[in-house]
Image (tube, rainbow, N blue to C red; front, side, top):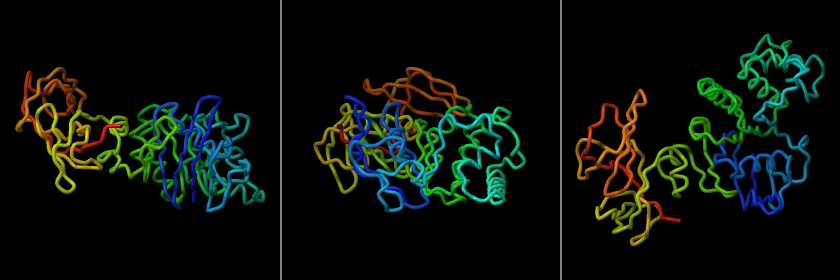
Length: 336
């Protein structure tokens, strides 16, 4: 439904996007994730037709749309600021751009407001709504013309944390119900994992990795993806041996088994594992606690192992000084 091929975009001497390619099948929700300034919003604006690439093509439903104006691309766009017209009612905002006859327009607006949980709000003005309600109006307006692809530019970032969590669940359910293809830009890792069928991680204008959320979290291909997406332990080491898809990584004089990934024997690697993959109480290794932070449902500990930083989580009060531990799962990631 959407394909971008080898996009490059420069602003003066700054390369915002470089050789970026991505494809979305019909009905997929893909989150474009990365730190501020990585180029994700520039990609979205190129797809929308608000920016022209210096190189590369944009295809919608198999047809080249690179040179089409925004209004002829068949895409819907939800901005970070919602961009509602303050002088128009909710109903008029949703109806804006619809080319239906008057009676059909009213019926379409009623259907959409009911769909987003705002039935009966047609006559209200945007300033009479909460931030969450304004976001729903913006979404209803974007999907009103039945676009081929829906583009969302950090639409929940202006909301408080609790409301953001509620609305992302509603948004996921709504997009699934509509079967809509969506490109969702965000810098919030948790939001991307919760909403998307696949997540594409960007760094400095380039695509680092694209994969389903579970694979991206558990099997990152680069140290950047591992550290950017959630908490990660990354210990420098070397692949001592390889057996099929398993490897033994030598770290600080110790040998630790791990998934091989794309590494070969002798490669300089990072041993990657998540804090929740550390088992405390028994094991071949001993760590020394540096600090402990109580977070309500868990303790987060920072410790040292042969001088290496170790982050782990526990469900009960931690020991005071040292503790034995084992790493239940790990992966070797080649250093880049």
